Length: 523
Image (cartoon, rainbow, N blue to C red; front, side, top):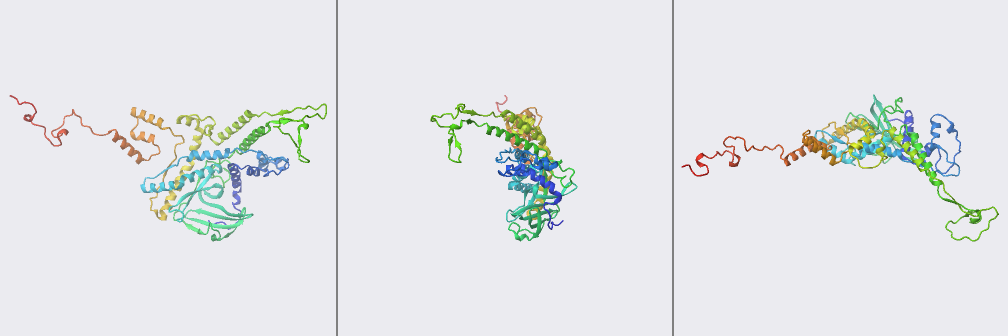
């Protein structure tokens, strides 16, 4: 399928998806100005009418306008709304649960394994962390294979965020995908680069248009970033040089919308209004603190004029005042302190209740976010308290493992075509343990297994070193046997042995004759 000749971009059928991407991206970024603009409030200190017609409308427009972030700022006041970055924390936590440790990618061929290790050392772990964090916010991320001899002598894997891609699906499988990036933007005019991945080749195109419209296609040499690219780049392999890692499935929002039915489900889906309510609670809490600042109410006679048009002020640190007379006999010459109470417990309980609903809906345990203390626990206790988070993690792994294995296999195919000569093999990807036992607990377990004679040395080594491959485990087993003389053949000193088998006299030496025995001869 050729690149588009122009028109709306992203394509019009995908407008609802990319509009929603914009909502999730704004919550993930957490910029208060962007949130206010997203939900209808103005930026800065400009006031809007207190009653807007949109707040009385139904549907999406009315619902968005009634968000806390969409409420107008009263005339003459500054916007004091506070944002709590819980959405970003959710995305970061999801990435850490999956890729805090690099996944184990193994094959049977030694040369191929060495090449995969080079790929991991070149930054694959960081790429997976990057894609997984933003993918948690947007529902998924893409991986693509790149190569450039001027940068590296081997191809590498790069992450692309979901709001910069237009996928094509067939029977639930990614058939092709078009990545896009804005190279320049000056007012309404902008330059956009499209990179379309299809089985067997990659297409490149440069377009000069406006926001939302590709405009006309121009030569790739028209911009520094694309002048070295070819319009068509053959890959030499039949597989797609890109893949999609969904956060979770199914996506509830688009399950009956064909264009989005195969996309992943965002961690933010269905809890956007709870993010908004959490910000409202914390904003109210901070308002209590702001209003509760100690203030002094003083008689007007105590105020010192600052000059015409400058108002009057009261010096709180002044120790001596000259004699003042009341202007009227009824005026009381006294200073009244004023300080309001801060509703700490009420706000904290409300905020924690909202946070717990968000975590339960997303699929995380409160313990994962440190809401139940930081006391030391064994891995078994941690697993029990974080069971909900670990279930969510396992579900995410179920969707991402086969996609990751597929993209690494494709990378090996392309690396082979580019001249590395490595043996192509589908790898086995194993994610690290979500909760690791401490070394002391593992050693005690291994010791008990050894005493009960219920596990072999190999099994116990696997228990203590789950990240080791079979070669490392086998070498360690041999070292343990050698150090403890396990398996060595020790001759039985009481066993009957044939002539010539006396080790102390050397091999093949006959026992002494009777007349050669030590002691005096017989008389």
